[in-house]
Length: 293
Image 1 (cartoon, one colour):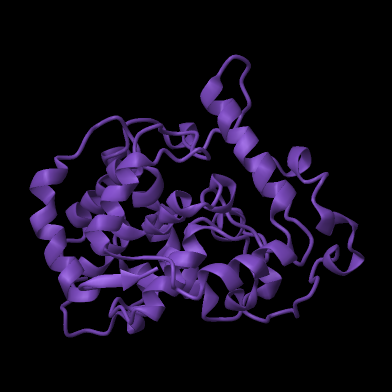
Image 2 (cartoon, rainbow, N blue to C red):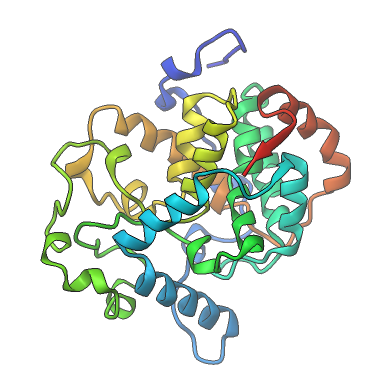
């Protein structure tokens, strides 16, 4: 099925999109990605564990609401998308067990895979390129445990499928609040995924940045960005009791995108300098000029 620029992305059924097996492009087996096993004398795995431990200790309802108050004023800095992405050349994601390269490399790896499979979906390519751009918070005082890693809802019972669930939440103050320790917590059944307050990080931040700056990316792109790290929901299948009918469509798009976010991570370096002119055209189409962060 082919799509043209004149078609509305929002009416597409992602089930119609052909998705080749990841073995056609991944450089290791699917089971070898997202290996969070803590291995003795492995500094990368230890770094990942400590990042999640700090996250799961500190990400409370109060903390998340406080981050909204600070960051969603969009008064911290103004940069173009290229400037923000180039800043990520200095960032190594401390929560990532698959690769220890600058984040800009991952951005182009993901974008180029989306481009190879779906050259007609330029919005999906740009989404892949910028999906982690909210990590620029790490250069403006935010610790990585409040920037990177998987996200999860606060204000309700923690899912068993959250990374390191049994080892890292013991000191989280919300664990002592009975209001937050039921299946529904502060929410209602079938309230919709968008009603959940997710742990603070680059996903939620960039979603709001793009909305604030009136990006013309389709709603599917914004939803991909907002939920791409919400693995307990889109991959493990948790929190279904909060879903409404439209959430299934969001989940399908996120899982399409997830192929580029996760399975393209490798030591193969994209030729970033030669790729910039193509992606700058997409930036100018959907998110031109400076953005307020």
